[in-house]
Image 1 (cartoon, each protein chain N blue to C red):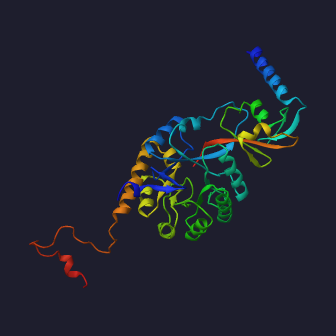
Image 2 (cartoon, helix red, strand yellow):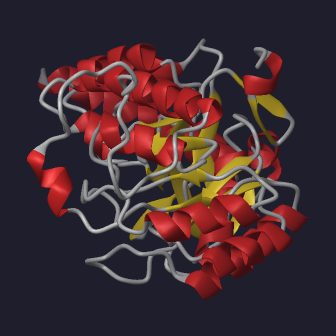
Image 3 (tube, rainbow over the protein chains, first blue to last red):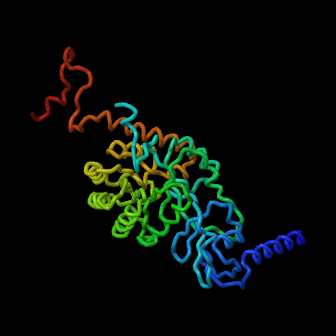
Length: 89
Length: 271
């Protein structure tokens, strides 16, 4: 159990460093301070396991079309929101 | 009356049902799906919320509604200003599920009544950006006209505050809104039962939107079916034309040929 979670953690870290390739930066992610090594919104979404889900993204208050995620860079102190449809009236 | 004329059209889409259904607060996603089927609704509403990044969960909601011939109506609940509502609408559009939006801007935590000034601003901006805008509004005939001028594709006055089940508190205002409206009128909030649905339609509404009265009914699936029938009954009744209300009785059996004397009370009647 522990071994498996360590492996999962290691592979996630490897994926992050492949995609990030740089130093971790601080940002506001869904209202909380977070550190990430992703250099683009697309890489950030993948590192969070959101790439395959129907989620929408906002960067510094502007909605970003999914097609643009990989082209949009993440910079220190950016405010990122990932949102989705939930039940409502 | 033919089938074509009975279709409600909003934003260029001819809808197969005049009942709009909310997707919140059901006991489970499976009950929601069953209720949706029983309701026959085509337009379904959603809220937009932050993904919980601590939970690796897929969106069970869209799995329940996916693959159906539905029109998605995301709301801007959670917004208390026009700016926030516009942000939510733009995000919702990026889901790729159409460009409809229900502007819902509440300025009061207990009443949840719509903020008229901010609602008007958001409606204007989003209509200009090409959204099909359905603003939730109070039952104010002047505000309904303003929203229409601002580009609303339909107006959605509440019968009473959201989730109260108090029904239609001001049928006069609702009647006036219907009388003056150049766009469809969808009664949006406060309905409690199928009787309220029928009443809204008899007052001339083009459709209704319900969530809590279905989701929180003892049997949500049965209530969804009841709402469908209530809407249909009310709409047919409106088309059929109700009799005028009268102060005194008028016999439904012909009086001619009756051979008994008039009842004694008749003698005491003033002419």
